[in-house]
Length: 353
Ligand code: SF4
Ligand code: SF4
Image (cartoon, rainbow, N blue to C red; front, top):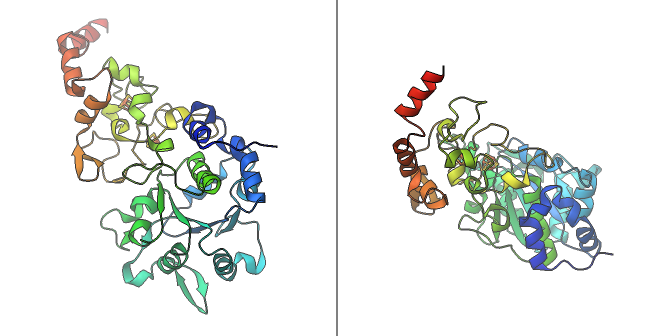
């Protein structure tokens, strides 16, 4: 029989390396008890999205996904993944669940909300013989929820569907519903632990976890990739990969790790197998509000680091990097002066050849 998990231990569990194998597995006994005791159900709706966030959740295999959906988060409705059948799996069932649990359910929204053409670009079903527009569903259901989880960068900040020219006028959920607390769980896609852990916090403690200025739970988005990167030693020694597959820091190949908030360097993806940079792909900062508003494989221009504040990657690296107190530029200059990179090093390399 699980004992109650203190909030302090919960946060430590979510934020710590112990969660690397399976956060859902650790939380399952506590959540099972909470769900059996009548914890609020979860309703999940999808709009302007690729379904990647749902697919990411399906990657929770410890315990298996059926247990996660039914016992860990009590998922009552999902447009593409649902145990229910018949009328329960229709919009009729959706709105009946909302009515039964008014003010006492969590709404998960996946995808941006297209508001162009009065919302007609995104129809998710039928209600009273009329098209059910996604924007109307988000407004009507969201305004009756105890909290909304905007899952994925599209739902949190607009993401790819809202990228200019944004022909369908996609908006993040926070611009559609104003009367209910909203938690942003960005990522393209988000890690399943970020989704399950945030839902678990709201269900177990009845309130929101600590959030940063962009509404992201700090227990998952409090760290910067660059600070915990497996390639950080390369950066500190100014060894930069010039081609994909090379050893070295991926900064010159467009890595946005110095401005990206997420814990995937130690949480790892695919049940602890690997993560973006370790696999050789530059971080694209998929958890940041401006994603994907920059060239993926180029060094970035000025970036927002807080509402109304921007900085270049060099400035950010300089502030954040323990070994780069004078900034990447200064760091590089120092390396040129000491001959670790630059013309002298290049001449040595050519001599080696
Ligand atoms: S720039 Fe990217 S690859 Fe290089 S150390 Fe920072 S996060 Fe890692
Ligand atoms: S490391 Fe970068 S690209 Fe990978 S999930 Fe985190 S923010 Fe996204």
